[in-house]
Amino acid sequence: MAQARIYRPAKTAMQSGRGRTRKWVLEYEPASVRQREPLMGWTSAADTLNEVRLLFETLDEAKAFAERQGLSYSVIEPQPIIDRPKSYADNFRYDRVPY
Image 1 (cartoon, rainbow, N blue to C red):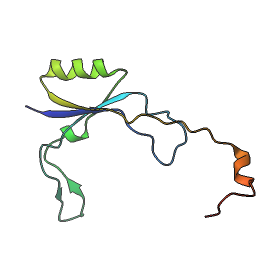
Image 2 (image 1 turned 90 degrees about the vertical axis):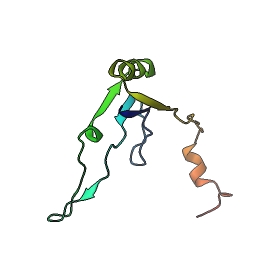
Image 3 (image 1 turned 120 degrees about the vertical axis):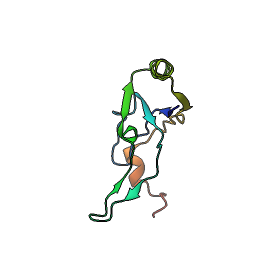
Image 4 (image 1 turned 180 degrees about the vertical axis):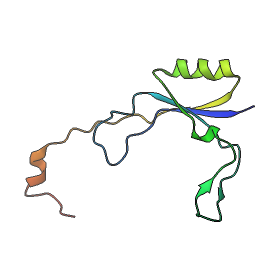
């Protein structure tokens, strides 16, 4: 039986918005060890399921898909988003501690 994990991706350090973090992702767990190819030095794996990444609008859709396919899955809950209000004027305060 194949293993899968369902999660919502976190935003990368390179983006300020949350554009690609709204959907749930289902990824298969690696079934085989990655090996280094001797001629070119690339890493490869024997199974192609580790390249599959499915996107779902809701967690329930992702769970239903995994159950229909007979996958055992684990859900990784996202960390809560803490929105800290910031002011541009705080960059120029006289009592600000420099780096």
